[in-house]
Picture 1 (cartoon, helix red, strand yellow):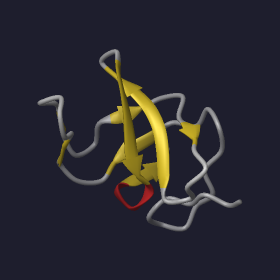
Picture 2 (cartoon, helix red, strand yellow):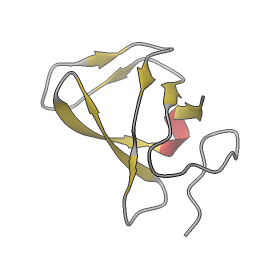
Picture 3 (tube, rainbow, N blue to C red):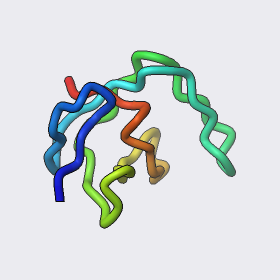
Picture 4 (tube, rainbow, N blue to C red):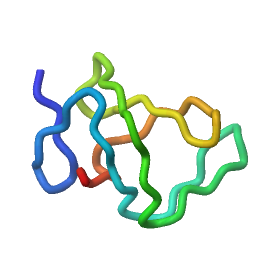
Length: 69
């Protein structure tokens, strides 16, 4: 399974990504601002989603909103 960011760059386990637009995280009240760096991502069974932690909160991000650093 190949997981890619919005530019088509392949993502690997442990990569760092940057958020491409402001995102509201449902259920937590967190807003990820454009340019926020998320480190140490984990891949899921779905090629359109990645699992990560931000401020000690586990979240799942859509790959269409992230860019590999």
